[in-house]
Length: 524
Image (cartoon, rainbow, N blue to C red; front, side, top):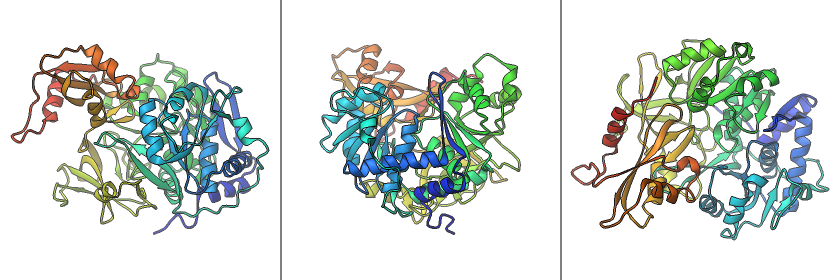
């Protein structure tokens, strides 16, 4: 059943600008607490200006635009403008180092980038090795610097009338790079239809309406803030309160100040909020629902309810699934130690290694049914093999191991993929291992996630040195810092003479994980 029709981001925005011209859509609070806001009609006109400026700069439908930005209004302006005139945004993590940016810019074939002064240096270092990158636009600055174009100059005299291009539902709007089990991330292609679909399905699951306001503190370069907050608000005619950065000490103050009714968090920022001094007045916040993902203990759930009273709903989703295949129900039994039951618009299975369904209580891989480009990602950019391996006969193989109880609720067990969850970021162990192995003294390396009471997992590298070579843990960490985003840099290094292996030589990471869990149990 097609619930998208012929809708696109352009049609959705222009419809809301017509229906709610004077209603606030975007409230932005910067790091200093200054606040600006845009109505639907003001946003639409600003988006038109950016779209026309992109066309004037030679950007064509299908061209890729890198957005290397914090949570700022310009991110939304360029995202929606690209959707209007047919270009494709390529958001990058603000912690990315030049080598990581270089790969994504070249692999995506980005022709233009948008950044801000505090992030410009890394992009400047990368662009010299990116021959296809023609222009870099600098936001939030009055001084361009060498090789940059000020946003003010980029937009000068650009009309605020609608662009002539008419996008279609299956046109690509974004390419979201996600860590895989190999050393290189994959570009996940997301269409107009995908964005509208997630806005509809998740918005209905949250019962979002025009009077709601999403509090957005998670980074816009990730799918959570785009999919579950911004798009649900746009589709429902609601609004968003966008915070430049997440602040554990200010989260509920910001919710109160901006009248936010719905939020989205990960376990790590939730634990950071719980670590703040108790302030009884925060319980009078307007948040009626906060969706969250990843591991929270029952004690933490109880403390959250006692201190804040903001109802929690654990969910599960991936960049590739677009929407949330499982959600805890809003109007039925909430089992927040689970990732919920099958959500509106999805079908799920739990299967064994042969792809056969397993009964309730038995662990297996989670599969999600859907249609590429509509309810699932369109595919991986320039990687047909990975696309075919992931989506088979209409089922997306998530790589996550779950079990289902007798009532149809799913419980996350482990990652079939070799991934580490660190403070809301997915870190591919292979990416870190590849960098450590480049150290001249290293013979072999294994990287795992170990229990961490705040960030879910910390990163630990087990290293075997070459015969006769010497290196310290500090040296290995120092080697990684300029080559990896800071959230990918190992916090711990342990030197070993050998690794536990199977009879055919495969490293048994589960043994290392078990040893670490027994040595450093997570605090509850």
